[in-house]
Length: 250
Image (cartoon, rainbow, N blue to C red):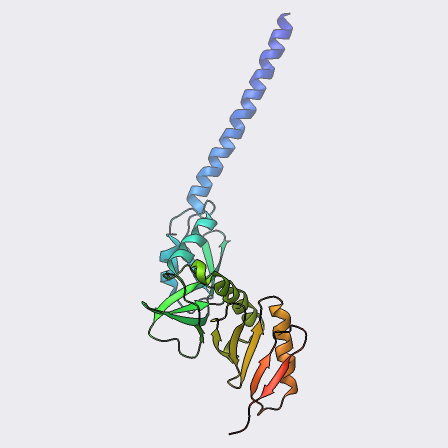
């Protein structure tokens, strides 16, 4: 019996020794991290809209912070909340001491006017800034957003919800097809039949919002078949074929 007790004691001592060794390793690792993985360099790339120091300040990250323990989701959220012209943010670590913030800028696509002023939108519907005029960007008429908040997605009153949804469906499609610069105005006075000016020569009637992507393909194909001097009304309401009514020469 004494031998069994001695064996049990030695076993317990072995387990305790292993636990102490693991704890010692963890302590050493923590000390190593706290000493050797502090941020010494913060690099900002990709943005033309903001200076690097503006992005760093918005991030809330400082030299001396722990590189390993950063909450990247919080950093991205802070940057987007404070800098409206930021579209996407990626955070990466370059060990042992460098944090890299890569920014993709938002691009103004359209503008609208309210009683309080003029505002720029990107193609996703985010309000970018208040301006005196929208310049050569797409002017949106026939629908007025509720009180715009810079940095937030535009919202519409219930009476304008159909037209607003139409607009927010159309703008991304125009961006994907690189057509934004060719459109000068979108009119949503009729919420089920958006009309826009295209290439300064055509008035395009889209009809209902259903099948917008196909309608834009149809528009491009129709224009490609017309002469370079043609101008008039292109009706895409059918969704299957386009009708063209040419303007009479002055």
